[in-house]
Length: 214
Image 1: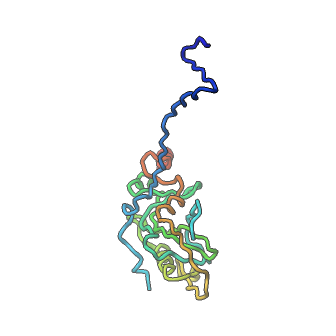
Image 2: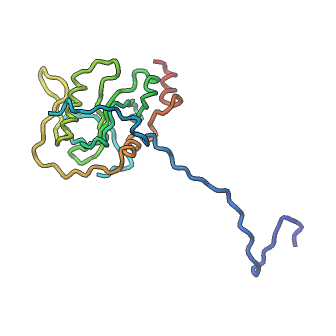
Image 3: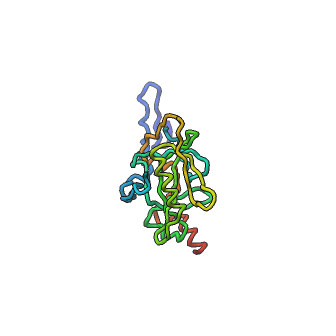
């Protein structure tokens, strides 16, 4: 016997003690900031210029001279007129309503799922002029290259001499069979900008910008 009235002795021949109830645990999946792409899409396309399964991390890349390029022609894998800030930590995706809070840092751009000649699938960033900024030959030629790459393989070039901007050469030889990622674009964007999405005025990128000053 024990003097503790709260204790309960259980003998081997008797029923086991009632298990201690554990508090219920609720697991909530993290929300995807790209879950509603319709709210981000802009009604524009590349018509004026026309004449593989992803890993955990999806690289964000820009045009590079000499690269072989193919852009997914499916509009579902393109997001136009968005804003990105490049930092040493990586690229940050900025919701349009918060771009003004970062001053001149956000760069307007178009985002495309693409693949290079080595078979690496990635998110291609094509820079565009910011609102109020004049267009220039680098922006228009970059858009032309991306548009051409939706039609077939191209090799990216930089014209020499008096010409400026990006150029391309159509690739005539056989490359390889394309195996475009089948995951929806919102999942690819979440992999391209892991924990680097500005969705509020309290985001660390905005706080740091305010502390440093314009």
